[in-house]
Each structure stands twice: as structure tokens, then as C-alpha cells.
Image (tube, rainbow over all chains, first blue to last red; front, top):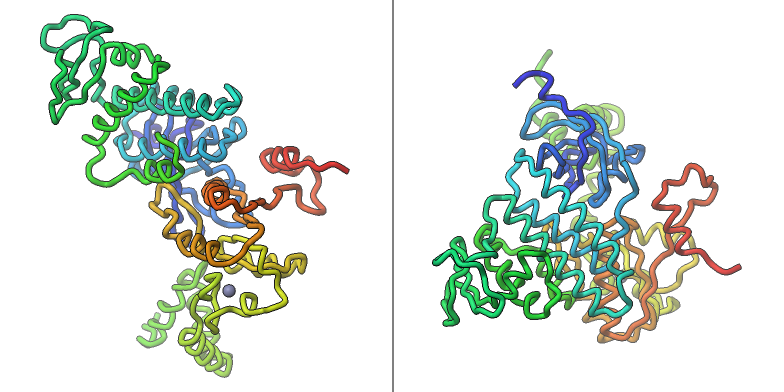
Length: 253
Length: 199
Ligand SMILES: [Zn+2]
């Protein structure tokens, strides 16, 4: 590694999580556009005078500069490019859910510039939700469909993308009126009998999920089951804390 | 450089359990206590061991207390229908100094931290729900910090309160007294705008 590679300047990113480090510092887990997930030490960020502390919060668009070891570099400069996404209430918990997924599923130092755009887009959608309609069910629908779409792109980016457009046995396109069994890590196969290791999906739900249109209630419901099963395969045994909190908030995610 | 006496070294190491105390300040403190102020050191030993022995959590509000119910919880002149929820015992001190509040408190001893696994049980919300079932509280005031985690905590508790049919309010976030608008950061300013009042 050359010296120039060890200094990174003005990289766009978001703090996913921060934790105290030594007496006055923080360790930040950051999702950056071009360098992927990275851990940075923010020296002195926990002192009263530090300008950094209020910037080091999640959901705030940042420009970060750092230098040093790849696995734990030192933050050298930090600026915010816009104010933090104004997330409150259940939407804030949902945004934390996105961060927990990224923390759990992204390998450090793997760049995912497209996923980064999806992340920004998902935050944007969450923030806009309260304005999409006054009725809680409209907000709830928008929230769930936003989370499902992010999960889909996340799986795709980390190399476990779902197959949603053809039946993996025959290669035939998915028929909207057909019934399928989605066998994890293989794909959809025609059939209706309940296979223990597969998720039963309608053709129209598969197609809806493929084109990011989860507006049919059945599609939303079946996509949720599919995503949960697919994610569980890569998340291991440790539960997702934010999912439990969302459930306790009686907010079915 | 001569080696330190082993006990002095252990004292320095022990002092480093204090927040913000690194090796150099630990050394300064140890020499100060042993060389310049042995009386003060003895007092520190006595008070610390007595406090360690007697101070527990208040059974009602969870703040530090040497009696089962702390002085605030056992004061019959306090308004028992008002309950203010704070993150730490230090927050109680801060609010008590205003002398504007005459209700009771509940201390979370932290805040929800979704990605660290610090959930409702860890911040004592079971105890809070129990307390609200057994006492008649008219209003709960959320005084968590104006951070994201403070906001998440406040939201979670407010949902519990709505379910229980109890009125919930939240401290207003605003511009510090003596502050000038141009130096206030934009998120504080937008909170202050959102929380503006009729005059
Ligand atoms: Zn008490």
C-alpha cells in the first residue's frame, strides 16, 4: 500500500454506529460511498469543546477524511454537507434497522457505491413518509415497502441477489397467475405444496418485488416472509435488535 | 529513573478507573494524596467505603440513595402526580437546580441504544410500567437528551404512555439563554422553530 492510498480525503459517508473509545474518543462505524464500511477513531470527539461530537451522529450526510491503518484508521477531518435527515419516532427506529443490517451484513472495506445510493434513497423515502398521507396505514405501507426494497438491494449487493423473473427449473419467465416455491439460494420453482425450506409466493408477488412495486397487500406480505428467510441465512443466530424493538412498538416490519 | 514502590504503582492504576484520568493525572493524584494531603486521603478512604456500603438505588426512582426511598421520593410535599423521566442521576441534579419542578423522577440509567442491544428492559421500563400501574400519575415529562438515542427513547416511552392513557410531554429544545442566533447550530434552531409559542 502506498502512502497516498492511506490518506483518504473528503469521502461521502454516513455514521452507522458509534461507541465510546478510551476516555475522550469515539470509534465510528461509517458507510462510505467509495470505500464501503470502515471503522474510524475520532480522537477527542467526546470532549465538550469538540465540534465533531454532534456531527458524528447517524443519518447525517458527511464528508470524511482519514489516514492510517486500513482496519482502524484515524479521522482527520469531518464536515457535514447538509443537516441530518429529520427522522423521528417509528421512522427513526426503521432507519436504525437499516444501519443494523449494514453493520451485520457488509464486510469491511468492500465498496458498494450503488448500495450507498439506495441507502440515501431509503432515508429520503422514510423522511418523506409522514407527508405521503395522513392515514397511518398509508405510512405503514410506505415504510414496509421501503424496508423490503432496501433488503432486496442489500442482498443483491452482497452477492446473494434473489431471482425474481424466471423459474429456475425450466428457465421460463414467471407467470403472474402462477404459484411458486422460492427455494433459498436456488430460486423460484413452480408448485404449491408447502416445502419446509421454501417460501410460497404468487407469480405476481415475485414480479412486483422484481420491479419494486409492492403495492398489492399479498405482495407485501409474501415479500416480507421471503426477505426475512433470506436474511436469516446470512445473519446467523444473533437476533436483530432493531427488529425486536420495531415489533414491540407494534409496528410490523 | 527509579522504579516506583509497588503500592504507589497500584494506587495509580486504581485511580485510572475514574473517567478522564490517564496515566499522568493518576500519577499526579497519587503523589498529591501521599505527599501533600494525607488527611484528605484518609477522608476519601472513609467516605468512599461508607458510600460503597450504604448507597444503593432508590427502589422507586432508581437514583442513587442511602435510604430505600431517596429524599425526593420520600418527601411528602412533592407532587406525586408528576413524573419526570431522565437518563442519569446527574440530570436530576440539573433539574432540581432550576427549582421549577416539584414532581417526582424516574432514572433510566442510560437510554435505548438499538444497535448495542440496550433495550427497554435494560433501561428499567418494566419497573416504570409497574410503577405507573400502582400509582396515580397524571403526567409524564420526558427529559431525555436531545440526541438521536434520546429521541428514540422518548418515542418508545411515549408509546407506552399512550397505551396506558397517561399524558406525556417532552422538554422543549431551544436556543440557550444568552446565545445569539447566528451561533446556534441549525438543528437546534429548527427544533426551536418547530417548538415556537404564541405570545
Ligand atoms: Zn427516588
